[in-house]
Each structure stands twice: as C-alpha cells, then as structure tokens.
Amino acid sequence: MLKVVNVSAHYGPLPVLRRVTFHVDAGEIVCLLGANGAGKSTLLKLISGVMKPSEGEIFFDGVPIHGQAPERIVRRGLVHVPEARQLFPNLTVLENLELGGYIHGRRSLSPGLAEVFDLFPILFERRRQKAGTLSGGEQQMLSIARGLMARPKLLMLDEPSLGLAPLIVDEIYATVQRLHASGTTVFLVEQNAMGALDLCRRGYVMETGRIVLAGSADELADHEEVQRAYLGRDYRHKWER
Image (cartoon, rainbow, N blue to C red; front, side, top):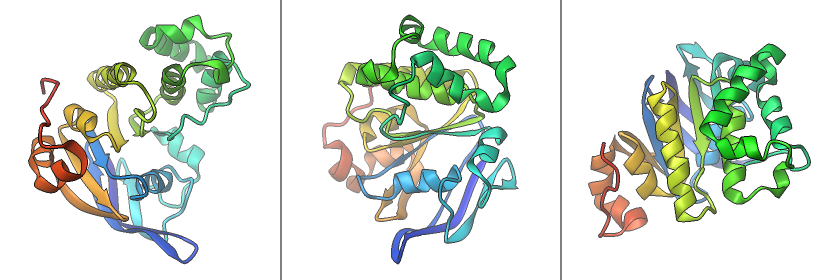
C-alpha cells in the first residue's frame, strides 16, 4: 500500500533523512521506532506532502505521490495525524471534526461523526467544548478522530502516546487495535517502543535519518540494541498477538 524508496531530505544544507526505504502492506500495523531527532516526523511530512524529498520516490497504492499536494494525498486515503495534536484550540470539538471531513463534502459529515462518536463517546459529550480546554488524552482522541473523518485507507500516527498517562496510553492503543480490526492500515511512529511492539507485527528502527533495523515485532523486541536503547532487559509482551 505504501512504498518509500531511497528517500532523502534536507533542512537547508543539513541532511535529515538518508536514503530511507521501507513499505507498509494493506491490513498491517507497522511501527517505526526511533529516539527524538531521529527523523521520524520529517519522514511523515514527506509522505503526506507537507515537505518534498530531495531524492527518492514515494508510492501509495502503486501511484507516485512524491511532489503531490497534501490535499490530493488525503483524497487518495493516506491521512497523517501529527505529533502534538495540532488542533484548532479556539474551535469546538465538533468544528475540529468537521474540518477533518471537509475534503469529502458536507454529505459525508453525518456518517463520519456518528462513527467517531461511537469510537470516542467522550467526544460526543464534549462536542460543544473548545478543543483547547480538553485534557491531553481527550485532545489526542480528537486528533485521531479528526484524521478518521477523512476516511483513511492508511492512517499514519505520529507519537500518539506522547505526554500521556499510562492508562490513557493503553486506551489510545486499544483504539488503534479496534481501527486495525475494522480494516484500517496503520503506520505507527513512536518513541514508546514497548507499546508499539505490542501492537504491531512488524517494524523498523530509525537512527540519525537512516533505517538501521527491520524485522518482526518479536525480532526487534529480542534484539540487543533495541533492548538497550528502548526496552530494558525486563521487557515482556503485554498483549496477545
């Protein structure tokens, strides 16, 4: 579904990504692990069209999308939920959700709202409340729900656990599992390796703008460097795969 081939990117003269290659198949949850500053968020910006690669190619459903405008990429079904929520804080929950679905027209709003309110009942209760007054966990739910309003085939989530309490993180991850079970392909970008590896079947590790490891979740969890950098020696899986 998503194929990234030898993609590089620069901020001015500074290289940020160096010939990154990976893929996500339809129906998968694939994770990308990496420390802060590894280039993960930059990679998502390239895929979603917010930035342009300095070299390389990006394909979605077999169609090249590098160089396409972000709104065209969203129309194809590839949706990016950014790091740090990036909501419109002075708009209500409902208005944020409506903006997420605008690209498909007003007729699509009612069924889309029904689906996200079923997934996140708290957002229905808060629908008239300004987004900036929500808790951190509620804002993350709203950010994901806004992305779902665009009806994604593939949902890219950038650090959805960032800054949240463990119980809220578990709730967010359980939601990701439900989305996947309903047929949405997920590309999950995280520093929280323990949570990510418990969700996905397969993943990649990025360091200083390069993919340095790839394998199944079990292989990555058992890898000495991943354990040292992210997991600790007492890591154990929490979820049944």
